[in-house]
Image (tube, rainbow, N blue to C red; front, side):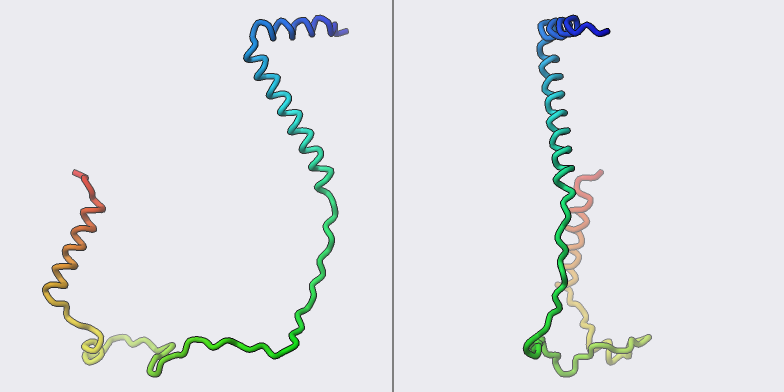
Amino acid sequence: MIDFSEVVENVKDFYREKTLPAILISIVIVLFFLALIIFIVQGFNGHKKQPSVTDTPLVPDNELILPDGPSIPDGYALTREPKEKWTKEESQEYFTMPDEQELKNLEYSNDKLIEDILGATP
């Protein structure tokens, strides 16, 4: 049979010789039992049956009025059949040749972007 007085003496000796590890072990044991108690209490309280919610159908008492949306300007096509190739007139209508200053600005911004990406790489 286990002699509890001897076990108690061993524990007391351990606390006297190694105080810090003994205190840390005691704190961990207490926290473990507190967590265990909390899980047990939550387990018993968590199984309450939720009251069922019945869906109530929406019955409007007046006719629904849709708000005014944005208007579509004349000549604006929502859908169109894409063509295989544009005619010369269509391309001239939508394409403008950039002038020299715009090309220099584009070159400068591209060079700056490349410099930002590469940084100080050798």
